[in-house]
Amino acid sequence: MRFPIKLFLAILLAYALFTSGTVRSYDGAVMLAVTRSMVLRGSFEVPDLPDCKVGVDGKRYARYGIGTSLAALPWFLAGQLAANLVSDDLVSDDIVSEFAVSWFNPVITALGCVFLYLLAVEVGLAAPVAAGCALVYAFGTGAFVQMKDFNSEPLAGLLLLAAIYYLLALRKRPGWRQAAVVGACVGGLLLVRIACLVAVPMLLLGLVWIALDNGRRDQLVRWLVAFAVPVVAAVALIGGYNYVRFGSPAEFGYPPNMFTFQLWRGLGMNLFSPEAGILLYAPIVILFPLGAVLLWRTRPRATTLFALLFVAFLVLYAVSASPTGGHSAGNRFLLVVMPYLVIFVGAVGQRYQTRRWRGVLMTLVTISVLVQLPLVYANVSYYYARRTSQLELGHDQSSGRLTLTTYSVAQRFAKSLLVQSWQISAEVTQNALYRSQWLRSLAPRTTRGADAATLVAESRSFHLPYLWWVLAYYYGAPIWPVAAMVAALIIAKCRAWMVLRRSWPNNRSGQPRRALT
View (cartoon, one colour):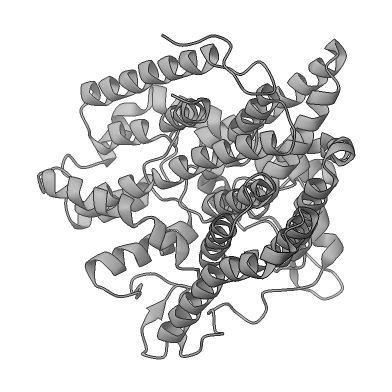
């Protein structure tokens, strides 16, 4: 078994203990509704969800790209198959299907970690450093939190990583088929998030750059055609999807005020704010400017590509009406470029290997992981619901109007999710330990039909650890099967991490420390 496969399994089994088993966010619920509608009704309609756009036929349609809903079809179909094997009196089909789809992003994120490892090796990092980068991204950034939901950012991040990896691999394995793979990844990226269109010019420029630098000018046109065919096919599919819904290939359904163009405010929110600043929610990336300088010395073109991608997405979302992605745990929009910041940090770790620098890196990694843990453990929707209900109003003497109370920087930090998540984690632990019988009484013994929909809706507001096996117990599942599944996952996870540890690469070629028997 090769090391990337072991890395994938180790991360996935660790994620398996932390996934939620439900779809929490509104965006995820809408994309899941599209998947369900395609399978059960053969349509894209989402009739039972608010805040969707009315199409030309008078039906309601989602505003989001079709890519994530299409990619989740195997998970949804597996859930439907499992639901057919389970008695209707035990659990509803919708709950089983939602549970199956909730495992989509753990798989996608773990696969993204593998591509991060491969890309880090491709740009010159030693294999042990590259593996460390993959683990830092998996557990020390917002990837750890976002894998719990059904948002599109993990899939977009995976496709962008794959596109860049195969693009840079063209230097060693030139050919039109490799260029076609890059185009297929880019096409899938556009199907998932049309905002990722900002990355296409840079990837196209990189393709031309590599062809000219390797003396492949005679094959440049062939490469460009191979790259363009899947991209054009994806754009045509997007246009057709828009036409079916809204009567125009260029109509995506988004409101006209998507951009406010408040650049400096958006930059501050994305980088430094206690609500979603990436430097606070993933402190390890503080070192990325130094890492970019170090990587530039050996891989200037790859460094330029990474930096341009980061700046492009940072500016794009800074001028949008929702710079950070709304009510999310940290900044989910910039998750697509977080791997490249982690690679920059890996360059720092490779260049400075003194005891002092190792201490600095390990301290930042530890803080980054600790920041993620309460966000993974608790349901952040409860924080936003409580914050909305506790908005404090003041009185403007000059106008006589009610206004929201303003806070100082220290007060905003104390009231932010970054700090409050620890308090919420303590509260949910207390509820789980001392109010278990009362909470279980809220869940009916049978979860069929309308009761199931009510139960799932209420479970998102349950003040409990937001873990699938905890929620399963409070849904009314017997404790022994749940405990047996958790124990089996823990044993499998420990075994996978032991295998990963024994095969950890110790040199630039990525050979394992010792052969496995």
